[in-house]
Length: 312
Ligand code: NDP
Image (cartoon, helix red, strand yellow):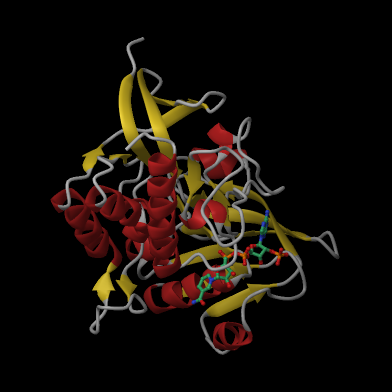
């Protein structure tokens, strides 16, 4: 397979990837960015963003990512649709396969592949995904207005999404596997004070019921062992995220959850010339603005690497 040679390859198109592309393009590194399966990343499945500086009136997440992409393109980044499916970081040229067919050989690689929603792992959850099962209340809640839904999870995301759903749906059944919530106190209080959110403590989901649409769920109290079937039309999963780092695991040092480890204060990974930015290496902050900041760091680190090694 004939490889395409590039100076700076950026994998992923969230705030980290596009910011890296803006900086790399302006530094004449001729960056090529592959967008992955969800161009724009997680912000494309949110609504209002109120905490990104520079937007005094807030902005819709998908629109903001269009702005990021346009800015990167205007600076000269080569933005392409495609998914990195395999890598070989054993040599000085870093090999990355796109969609299992195209091979890129890059002097420097910036990994900004983000994180994805976690699932419970039930067969019924997979079968009904998109047919009443969703991991994004903000994206899909609208389809369940005036109906009863369930949400599983007890973190800030679950609390936020339960509150969001409570405004659209007649009732929200919130399934929590322990006897306490992990969410911040203020969010817990809001959830508990909402009349149409019913909390089920110590509760596991055994099965989501329905053929081509969700019509109920079978749950069990993990203290008493008591099982019950509750009719719902939508089932939302909000149990956290996992970093999209699987294809790098043979080469890049990660923690036990799969977050890429960078040298503190830099975007450098354990492989020279490979840098990481955004949620794939950040389990603490996970904000658009911190991701963008780390994308800038990765482009500056990559530029120094390319110059120091005579690639630029
Ligand atoms: P978290 O990891 O904080 O919470 C995940 C929740 O899902 C936990 O309550 C966990 O239960 C539960 N869970 C995990 N696996 C299962 C399972 N198999 N079955 C049932 N329940 C399960 O993820 P979040 O996405 O909520 O939050 C991520 C980060 O983002 C946090 O730091 C959060 O504070 C932050 N955030 C902040 C917001 C804000 O400030 N507005 C909004 C949203 C997120 P258990 O507690 O038992 O482990």
